[in-house]
Picture 1: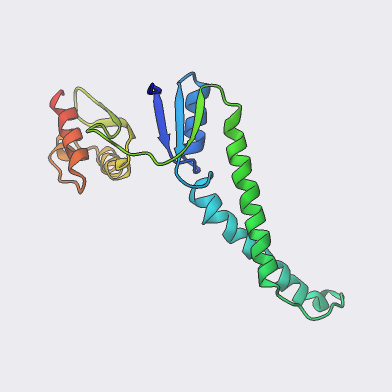
Picture 2: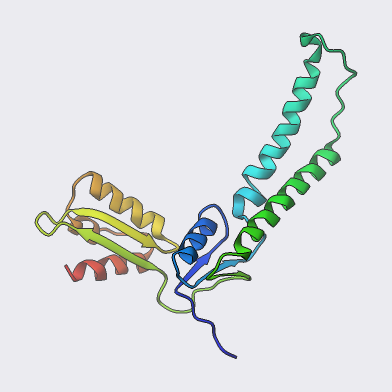
Length: 188
């Protein structure tokens, strides 16, 4: 079996992963987008889309219940919960199909239905730009599962104009990221 090589592998087809994978592929990177569940991530499947769809039905019921205030006569408002939930499911499915279709014709992008796993020590990439005179952090880019925690610490250091050593010597919840920071800063 031949293993396919990619320049970028994006895990998750949600609001961050999908656009990132598309942008990288359109920039010429051979990109894999791996999704273990339904396309679209949390927003489409369990968050924004189903919630707002059900909320829209509630809003319509509320408006109809106030029809008399606007000189419109109606009968009693009847909530048909199974119909509301069916509509929600239909809207979610429509969004899922739309998300998946959006990846089909993107050159250099391979959509993979399956679960991604890290099998080695490499868990992402990190780049930090440091001012040579002040040792202050000027900018950073992190692509890693635990990147949010490190990014927050680096942003605080940047806002406080702290030297990189303040971050380098910090203790993080994810030792692999701490080690990565220390390894990165050892070269400076």
